Image (cartoon, rainbow, N blue to C red; front, side, top):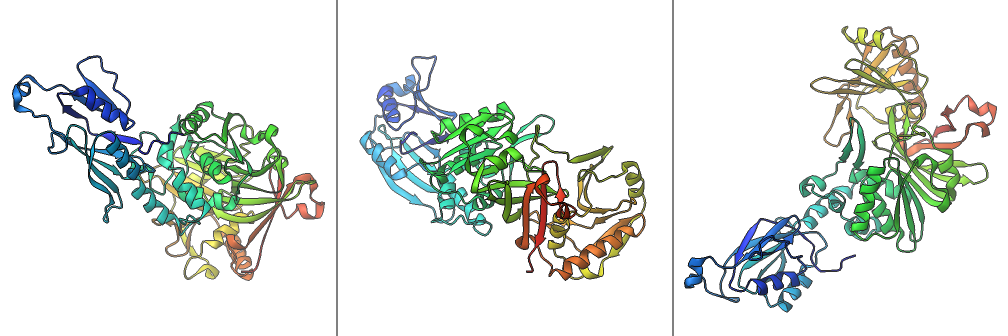
Length: 520
């Protein structure tokens, strides 16, 4: 990895006139800037990021004596260079002195923005400033994440986020867009194929994984390579990360980012993520960055006993990031250690699972596999006025733990997406076999969390769905109103469960899930 003290990002295009263009060119090249490949031999220059700095001889009127040669006591031009986070401005100042320049003001940090600056003169007396904006933006984001995950300055995760800046994996994106707590789409072809995950979710899942120095890790879904590089930093030079993506273009993008940054303990493979990567098994940790409805038996087998598998998982149209620990290697039994809310694009390929998506005109409905729903009847009922019904046991301040409980216990939930000018989404809808359904009156707050203003359901059809909601709510209240912190999930291959237990399982294609809740 290049250890030059400054990594240049951009500059507004500038022309410098001088009687000694070669000497000035040598000065800027001594600061690590590559020469500009100019078709005109009379024009010198250097490349600064994707911008150019031209160094030209004086115009004829200047040659007559209107432009004096100065060194350190005059300003022929003034310009600013923006550099990447991690650029050491103190070392840069030393480099400027060695190249014959002069420091007008030693590196300082602006109190209002947190940006670091350096003011200097080049060998011809041109005044230039160097500013590092990225650190301030990055620190602002990490400050926001401290309430969501352990990214303190002294934590391993905090140091990883600082050592592996996100913008290096999103070339060309504005820094103001990069350093916000949002996912950024990077590849689309009619549907979303790849993204750079939301930093808060990345931090939370890395905390769930609990990676340490020397760990052998497998990632499913390479994206930009940022998450793999973070894991590579956490496991150190003694550890290794293998990341797999089904889309070869996405894999190549991640590979090129990692190679450009000199990350040498991560390998990118184009392949079917659900198959894992047997040559490097067993793994201390496996992390999926694409949503799965079921755990691939290949991934379970390739996880060592005591290792952790962190996966965004689909339970009744709701997504949860579940950290599983393998507790029995001989029978492939896993038990959850933490469960969090999350949102990821679905896994593609052979192991994408039988998630049902029903489309009819502007209406799209996501339902769990096997849940029958007549979309024509649904659309007809949606055209009628609903009844607003409040469930007594859910009255008062709304508690999202009820929805988490309902999703994880296998209740018949669906998600309605009605394409319109407002792109309206009902994230939770209870349905019954008789065709009635109840939409929860929800909004989203600034943190993208569900809020229910009046704890009411909009009911279509008969009252059977209301009776069912009341029954589920009564069980939840009797259990002490548990949520994700109290959820415990045990997973094993379906055929390994005793027959008596199978009736209480959430059964998927390969695995059976037994969900229980501790008393809060």
